[in-house]
Image (cartoon, rainbow over the protein chains, first blue to last red):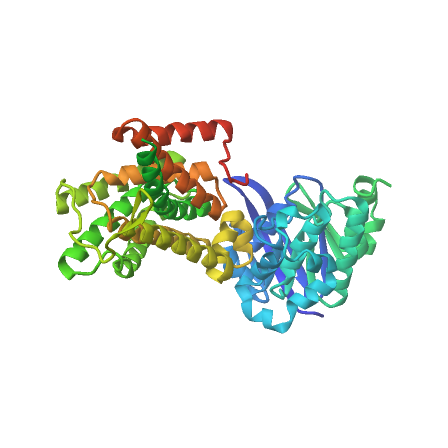
Length: 237
Length: 287
């Protein structure tokens, strides 16, 4: 059995005493791709924000590679090897594509000597063409690609993606998921939060269903795709 | 008549370069942490007094005192950040304003206590003489000060675009959460921006003392002027700040020559209101 890279135990979290997550427990093994699916407002974004340290848990514990990380500030957690690509990409709009990528490696600058930028440009050739442009001049699809590439620039051990398909045309969603498939095949551990359930379940190994701040269902993605609750409420079949 | 106007315009534009440098410090602080620092002008005033004092007691010329006052103001900025500003970041806007206005009043009272209320000036500057162009006389010290300000602004520009610390400041000002997620420790970045923003007033203060006197009420004047320059330029454009600084300096000159020496601020603020009315994001602002 593979080593557990991320372990979340009985996590509760929220904003300004408004609870969002309740008793959430799950794990991600090394090399695995795990999807968390659920309706809008279920707490998916809150979950990622709590893991990366943008929000403090009200109770429960989070372990990364065996080390407890709950309560640490985001810049410390990112340096341990967790890259969080937030909802909407959250680029640095007034910095160039190149500077956005460099900033991605801010917490782990030695990695720039390992040719990571060339690898990323190979993965996302559009970014190479646009490397001198300001991030705010990019199209929606290019922004999402840059957000993912910026997350990858530090060579993280765990990549957490929040709704990479949000607001994108279907053909662009396919392009993004095609790139994620490449990353997955290279052995990267990925935690994906997604409303586009069809895409998430077709690519990930395992999935958790989050509803009203609780995990109501879990299993292998193939299994979840056959589940009647999922088929009815998420896949519209 | 036109001669006086042009003469004053030249002087005003040269002084405007120093205003731009002061406003650049302010924009670093406001752009990164959204703190309206009302005490910024009083840091300029404090720098001018320190320049005066070092000049008087150690005989260091005002042109070189920034070598000493720059690190001093950087430390004072850090102190102000950690002792006061850091504690107000999560508070309401009113609290932040009260704190920086309090700091402003404190600095003014402190300088009054130490140096009394009468204006002080340095008896001597290394940069002497005038440059004569036709009927116009340009004071060499004003010209050198303007050039030094532009150089300092260029220095900040390169710091922000070419160094890791500078890029971290820009990233934090673009999107604080995203910056934290890539490993930027935001409190340290805030402290650096506040320290650097304050330290820039040391250069401005030294340059101003080469041709001008200082009194404790000057802090308010420089504070308001630098807000004018920043608001007229808008956030995010360093060349815009320089142009806006020159416009403000020139507007002061127009007020002085066409109306009355006491009307210099009046024209500036009329222009300021006009710009913000017609173009609220500033002349060069990006939002």
